[in-house]
Length: 291
Image (cartoon, rainbow, N blue to C red; front, side):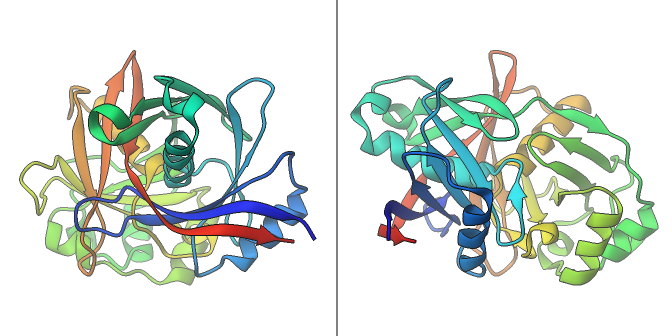
């Protein structure tokens, strides 16, 4: 039996929110895909993704992501959770302003260490890809348990991959957006039919006056309905805002969550010509994982 250092860490926590939980496991070498998937399955209902941290020849470390269903191309909140804690715990990493990570599917990305200045880290979002939208407005509304009248048709529905293929849907009012609860099975079928990884709803109304927009993210493809704080989804949204001249790239805060949550905080900005997403994290459980 082999033991691995293991933690459950909540990412994108704010003053009152619980953040979005991820687990991360540190290994001296890559685990086999079937081993990682088995661990992911054991975490169903506990965390949405498990991050496997292993050595890299090309970067400071390598990250691989699994949900209970499959390997995930990129997990923003898992990256925040793992790297925020690893930087805090590793003196060599803590002294660096920039740390590189090798992701299994999205190449080399940069982590910006702003813990000393603002108790946060930022991650380079993968380069955005703008993809054709296959689904009709009617099908999109039905999959989300919305009506066509709930969708803000002054803004476009777009599919952008900035880590995950994210369908971005504008909703007219905050009250409607935070009350939405689609069927898991119907939303999963919609995503699979239309080559979508996650769905992000947004509204330009917010509960907190110093926040730029409110978002919610649904991820039924990965075995759960809602992601309560999302790096890849909000990175796609940041690229959407830039593309549609709705934002100038200066630092902003996005609040994410549903009516029953204290909203989580995801920070985005443009630096050195790239979209960054960031936030802070909190360790909840620490120990050994045995297999």
